[in-house]
View (tube, rainbow, N blue to C red):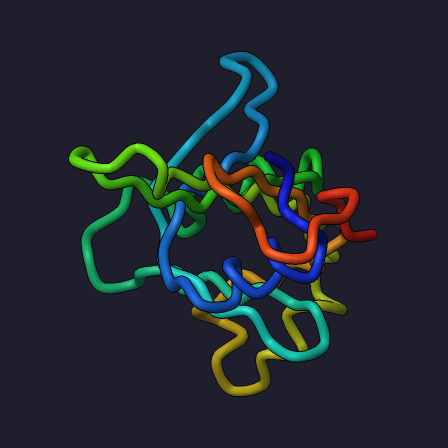
Length: 136
C-alpha cells in the first residue's frame, strides 16, 4: 500500500544510507550506495569521499549531475523472515550546482547537495493514516 507523503518523508529522514541513481549519457542509470542526511529545509547531503585514490578529481556521479541534474535516492527495508515489514521510499532529487553546495558551507568541497523535489513510498503493511503516497 502506498505510504502517505509525510510517512514516506519520515522514513527517508530516519535512514542514513540508500542507493543514489544518476543518469549517465551512454550507459543509462548509474546506481551507487551512499550515506546521506536530510535537513529540515528539504536538502539531501551526500558525502563525497576524497580519501581513496580516484581516476578523476570528480566522481562519475558528479559528472552525471553536471550533465543532467536529476537524481533518485532509493531507501528500503525488509526482513527475510517477515515480508510484511517490507517498505521502500523513492526520493526525487535535483542538483542545483554551486548554489546548493554553498549551503554545505565548510563541507561544500566534500558534499553533494541535492534538493528534494518529491518523495513517494510503498509498504507491505498499513501505513497508518493512508494518503496519496506522494509529497511535492
